[in-house]
Image 1 (cartoon, rainbow, N blue to C red):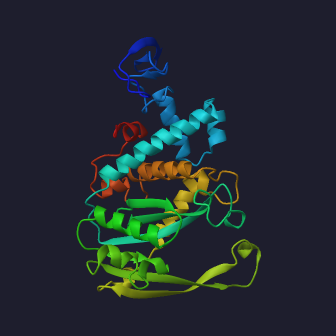
Image 2 (image 1 turned 135 degrees about the horizontal axis):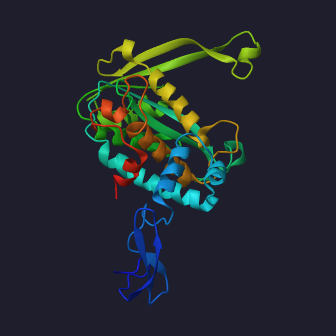
Image 3 (image 1 turned 45 degrees about the vertical axis):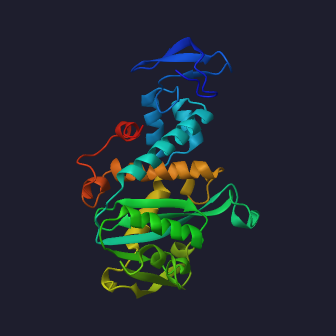
Length: 318
């Protein structure tokens, strides 16, 4: 047994704490005095595993950190530690399981958010605060979220996202994105990642104003036209749409408090935003049944043969 801090093997037993399912032995390092455990639920959390799963369930239903603290009577710092640990496990789970995906039509879009402060109140060189976008890719038929990336929206991150998408796919497919220049202009992110080994089209929605009334007060712009263009290969323009992913973006705003507009639930730290997105994507893919086909997206994509529980999702990756 080695100390987690200084790697010394000079340790002694230092009491135990009990969980409903098992007892965890504590140790103390003779060299640095730090205490640690040989085995703990969720990689070091001393919170009861079932209660941790309850916290994750509430997070995936759009409940905020402070509300979860009040409902579970856990300290806010404990809830955030559960978020961090579960987010890291879910990110590893998605990286391992979402591989060799077979799909005919994939849609890519970005959902807007911000960390700590809005862009007008953030310095231009601040890489940890301000405006952030979550890149998402969706299999049209199974509704599987294939990959994601939360970062600044620029050419570098767009290219990294597309390269990651390529590494998770099996075979040629049709890709549709919006008209973001980073994707298609010149030697854009799509061509850098896929070359000519893809059928690629863009969809541009044209917005216009309607007569102002009560129902349009908060959103005066409506779609008045759609423009679709082939960019690579022989893409079917009738199937070139991002509508399914845009509907999934709505689910993300509903079931993740950090994306709810005009509230105080926005992220104050970038890492916590990424952890929450990883948890949402893992839950959406493996735990939540989709109303379109009555299965989880992972079932529909044949990545698993059953609907997972939150306990299974958290225990799958060590």
